[in-house]
Image (cartoon, rainbow, N blue to C red; front, side, top):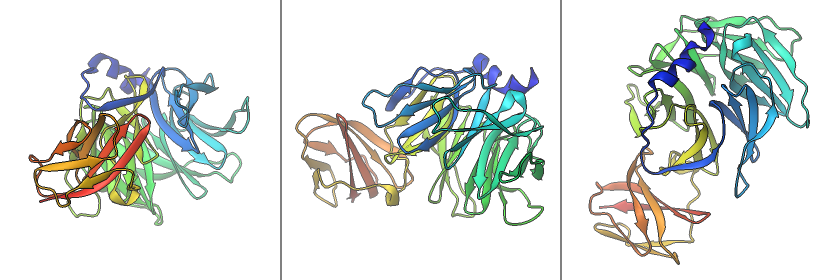
Length: 349
């Protein structure tokens, strides 16, 4: 079937090599795509499993729990209060459920959308990426039986959507780019944010940094505050990353063909989002050759990340960390000791 061609063809060309410093949060999914967070519960669309699952991330041993079965190739999710909107891509419709119900009743929100993938809410407007329709539509969720209106067309294969202020960011899967359009104007123009990508999936914003997942198995970011942003590659070797969600200052990522949710041992969040801990004492600051660490009772894993969110060094330490190979600048040290995670900022001379 044409509507499932893109995701099915990934099974043929998938690459299963995985870089180091990847932490598996939970496995056991069947083609996880996009996800949304509600408190400690992470809701996940399982494209090949034809269901919606959730995971309690506050659990010491999180595992998937089925929320809704018999969903025909779900892809995008969006939350409005307790209402979870689901893009049922193989049925060409968007449905919703009340997540407070133990056995939720499915309500059809809109039909006649061509393979809906990404969803994004901005007030009462629900934006829908029509993958094979080559456009993004929108509906008013307060209207009964709404008719989808074309918001913007000419997008080859829109996959994921993301609202940032009044701008709708759109990943163009086959177009190999990310574009944006102003939702506050009529007849908006699609403006290129970054081009030259390969099969773009999910998007996530952290202040000015836009994170992008693509079928090369990469997670990258671009600084949208500059006129001509360049791509910073954060991680390679992932098994088709698609969806993003932030929990406890860590970026959670679905791997479509890895059937799991992971985090990376990089700080993929801006400095303003990170709560710096005083549990660890590090010195000297500025540092030149070696950073001393006090407060660890046993060896712990660490990573050092620059201000672009790129991991530049990792390893294990208990008392000292060699910083001789770092370029001068400001860094964040992330230390994981059991279930505890500590962040400290330092300067390298």
